[in-house]
Structure formats: structure tokens, C-alpha cells
Image (cartoon, rainbow, N blue to C red):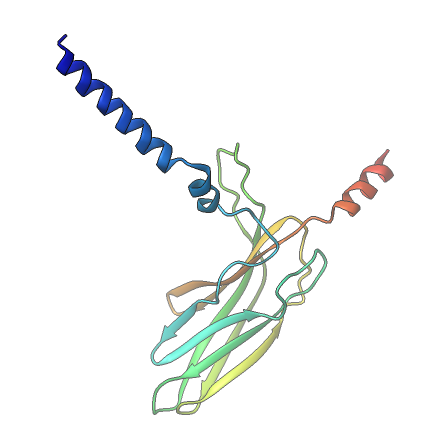
Length: 174
């Protein structure tokens, strides 16, 4: 090999190492996968259907195990005509996926309600929906809105595990 070939190989290796170091730097990857935290994850999504906008909002920012969430369904008629829409609201829960799991944890339906929302022209309604279903600790909980074949994930949160209860249960088991 000639000196020129060694120089090209060395420069290529150096550029590759610098690029990999920049891409995989901890300050970049730390924000790429957010840690699971209690509370709402994102702003509520909006489902639009025939001039009606539907959104769902949680009554609290955080929930604990045993709480019964209360949601608020907001419907806005953006048209100049009276309209009605049938909305299905579902609460689903699943266990967080283990990093060693080979299969995804399937959510189970904890609560569902179907509502007929009638709106006058340019009217806005807020409907309070008490779920009545108790939240289990350590679960990912999310709500979906469905109109006809359109389904969106409208809201979601993580229910934290109370560490004092776990210690108490372990002591009682012994």
C-alpha cells in the first residue's frame, strides 16, 4: 500500500468515528427516548368529522392507582348547519413493554361509552364523562375516540406504582 492509500483509509475512519460519536452522543439519545413519567403525555388530539371537531381532555394532570378518571369530551360544530354525531369513547390499559419482551403487551378495554352529540350551528359543548373504572398501578392508560371508521388516540397517561404499597405487600406476604 502506498502512503496515499493509508491516508485515505485513515481519514475515512476518522470521519466515520466522529460522525458516529456525534450521532450517538448521550445528549442526543437521552431526549430521543423519554422516560416514562406520571401525567399526560401530549396535547389532546382532535377528531374531525363532517364539520364537527371532537377532543378529549383528562380532568386531572396525574392519576394514582385506584382513581376513577373523569374525562371531558369537547365537541365543536364549525358549520352553519345543525349536526349530530355518534361518538364511541374507550379507555384501554396495558402493561408497559419490557425491554426484554419479544411480544407487545395488548391493551385491555376497561370502560366504553357511546354518545350521540347533537350540535346547533357554530355551537360548542363540553360533556363530562365519569369512567367509573378504577385505575391499576403500573399501567399505560389511553383513551380513543371513534366516529364511524375514524379512530384516534385522544389522551393517555401512565399510572405510577406506589412504592410504599409494594413494600407493605412484600412485608405482609412474609
